[in-house]
Image (tube, rainbow, N blue to C red; front, side, top):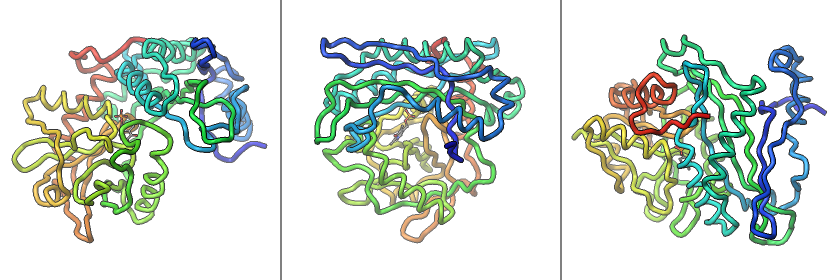
Length: 364
Ligand SMILES: *Cc1c(COP(=O)(O)O)cnc(C)c1O
């Protein structure tokens, strides 16, 4: 039976299975598909049915340590269409390194970074070869790539069958891909509000991208969205006074003294690749940056701009922050100058209209 919701996946997926001899057995799999033109003509039911089959990865068990206990981790990265018709991945080596850390953190055999890189490239390339990739559109340049499309890769680990509380000794790594359009919704609110719920604790798993970290943020994000906010701001678990992250994004504040501050990487903060990129781009512009603890009180009195960062949106500015019933508006509710400069430079590098002076882009 076709589901009424439908996740759009591209046909080619990558799978690797860790086998007894310590070898990763690799496979590229071409899931059911028609031509892109034929797929565009499908009725919504036929399309949902096709996507349901495409989202069924034959041979993967349903009852295992990942589905039962959250013993899994994942990555998110993008390939960007370029003017010359090619695609380029943004810093995939950094995602490969983080995936390695996440798997090691879950005490499962960690996927080699070189294999991750090749698999990411190989999956996007196979899909592109059969026409499944967004085409570059020069019209994107006129809106600063805010409506531009890209390919989203979602590598994830998946455990062998089992029902006891066990570590995964023989995981799979799977890489599906999906087209993504603009994340930018002009009608949505850009307000944020602090929450007293806890995302990550000292000694926990906040520093890796593992499945278990997303339960509380998902509940909280939807709760604040029902109240008209875009994003929830999580504070430290111990004192409830220091800012940590958004629900699945890092957070930055430009202070009145001109310093750009983001919380330092402690074990409750996820080391975002967009985060490290924006710190570099800010320093390149001569902006003073600090990675340190920052209290919500300092933010409420000193911040002039604020934004959250992550692969999905790049960066999203915050028009106001509400804490304990007080709403502080930032930059009259508009996107600030530094926020805009960083957003446009990041998108420009990714879509090839700004020079890639750090060598971040990797051809597919
Ligand atoms: C993925 C993620 C981020 C952003 O990381 P990027 O590498 O920039 O996409 C930030 N915080 C959390 C909790 C995340 O899961």
